[in-house]
Length: 332
Ligand SMILES: Cc1cc2nc3c(=O)[nH]c(=O)nc-3n(C[C@H](O)[C@H](O)[C@H](O)COP(=O)(O)O)c2cc1C
Image (cartoon, rainbow, N blue to C red):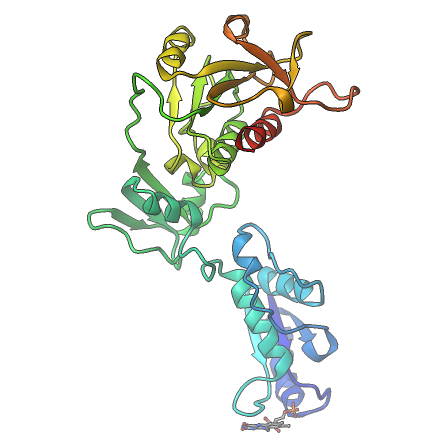
């Protein structure tokens, strides 16, 4: 096992070094490898209090590029951290204080604007009905409604339940809002995804649709499950705010007619018109699947084919990138 000694004295032969000597000898006798890091030799700036590290869950996330990252890595890799510091004016020395401020904030991601893991916060905020929360020890949870079952499990067990490599310390089960398809859709901005199978794409498009003011998302022809954990994570909470409807292709023409919505398709047909001149008031726009584009039936039903102008040498955009451009154009 490796130990990490953070040396906070500026004096190479001072009292702290003298006290540390026998300690290191004992480590050697016990076969413990001890790495001594002299903090006055490193360039460690004080914490800026910007909170940027709180928005990054799977990495350090600190915006300052100095000697901190290397020391943080040593702290993360060791089995024990020893603070060897003189007392200066009732507390540890300046580089030690700077290091602790930054290491504690970067290592614990619960100081941000959101209290607790982000997606759980969004679920609570937007009224999803929580059933159970499974958390790793030490994870700070937001205030939960009464009756929600909370279970604490070891990190390893949580990692085996979660399907991400770097879970945020929480897995939860909730019911989304009931989404029965209305006989007519409200509002004038919808995206229809035609067989988009990548859950990350569906979630990213859902998030963008929410951001740019669409009224909802319609999935048809075998899109990824909107409640697949990957889809849900990619929505960053939009799944709790913006309705998604799964609709059979045959039911679409009637639904759109009753809703007073025109149907447009993004396609590279001869007659496709530039999206900037298309006039996108009160319409639903179809985005095709990654592999096969838009189904011939939906294309035939579409009043207009529209295209996003781009360099000729590029054939197409990723479905989520195309959706973002379309949504932006619809919102303008
Ligand atoms: C600026 C300064 C402030 C200090 N403040 C305190 C203090 O508040 N309390 C204390 O017990 N010792 C204080 N000390 C004494 C040091 O902690 C003490 O001399 C220590 O042994 C120095 O360690 P070093 O020899 O490794 O540099 C202070 C020393 C300095 C230089």
